[in-house]
Amino acid sequence: MRKTLTQTIKDTTKSLSSPESVKGLLHQKLDHVPLPSNSALEEIIQLAREILLPGYFGQCKVGQDTLDYYIGVSLENLYSKLKKQIVAGLCFDLRKEDGEVNIDPIREKAAFITTLLIERLPGIREVLATDIDAAYKGDPAATSFGEIIACYPVIRTLCNYRFAHELHELGVPLIPRMITEMGHSETGIDIHPAAKIGTHFTIDHGTGVVIGSTCIIGNRVKLYQGVTLGALSFPLDRDGNPIKGIARHPIIGDDVVIYSNASILGRITIGDRSVIGANKWITENVAPDSKIYTNFRGHRGYEDGTGI
Image 1 (cartoon, one colour):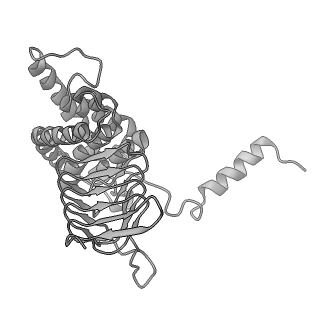
Image 2 (image 1 turned 180 degrees about the horizontal axis):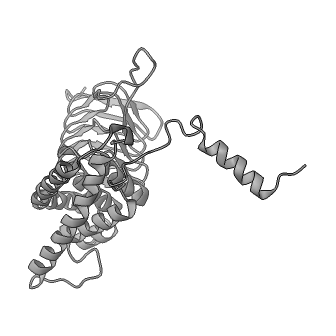
Image 3 (image 1 turned 90 degrees about the vertical axis):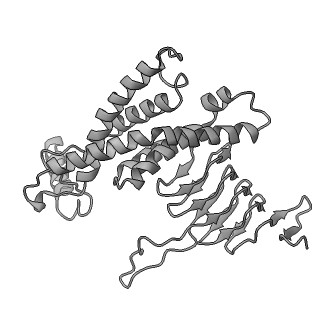
């Protein structure tokens, strides 16, 4: 005999509400604490892009004569929105079973962190300017800085990453990762906010690039699409769970070029000025000034800094 719709909903509700069904999947937040909001963070990133690269994002007409007013109003708006999301991030792991929690100190901490982040915006813009310069000089098809900023996915994702990285450095949980995942969804470039990336960084085309959380990238590094800077393995504890906090991603030196679909795995070092060819699988240290490639006849090549 077929169940009625009422009985089906009743049975399904019971199944989906059982403790076994939601084990590890139910987030019981405190009643007076907000949840992080993707839509609010999208507004924050839009504001950050408008502040860092005025005139390229947003709908407002802006010029040098109105820039002070425009930036000032935008910063006040950014402060208000970002502070709320930082509070939500700092409170995210609080549970009802923790009992009554006074979140006033958390709000004060969020206000302090937001102020520090705003103070760092000029430095973020300064580094972004080097990234734009690297993208322009690294692509003969680019006609202007304006084209780079308006069209190239690497600049959009680096806006997210540079902003999120500073929040991560200031000790904000969850929110930085949400921001970089927004850039990932928008551009196909996946950069963990904890990764450390130097100046004049660029990614040509971009789609499919992955940069892990403990990655360290020097200055003037260029990646192509599909490059993975990842972990070779995940050390496990005695219960079989991954051990957290271990440096497991590559260190990339200055002036390195890594071509499309190369995989650089593990806590290894790619020496300064090295070139890694397309589709290479690298799990050992590479000396400075090395070239690792496959030539057009399919022969594998390796040249180290000695010229041998």
